[in-house]
Length: 108
Image 1: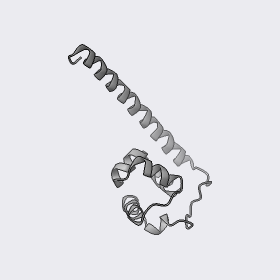
Image 2: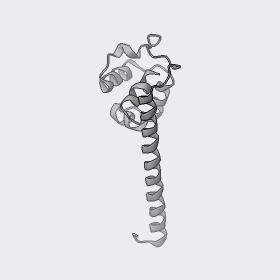
Image 3: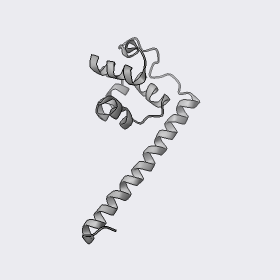
Image 4: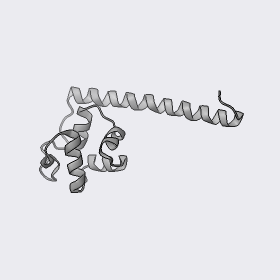
């Protein structure tokens, strides 16, 4: 869907777009799969992406889901995956550290 394409062009994660729009990550995922959002959601997306709201009208999508991914888009996808992997590892480290500190009853 167009939301995914616009998000990847900017190198944003779904989480980042959710923060910018005030929507949940789950809502972003639904929109990227082609579900239609409310008028308020479309207004918010058009403001965040700085595009015309009509771009999000159902049936008027100029970029079909089966359009090929360009080299730049593939690069953006790989970048976002790398960022996601990095923060996943950071999260796991912090979580494990807190578990150890809790067992010890003191900070490391």
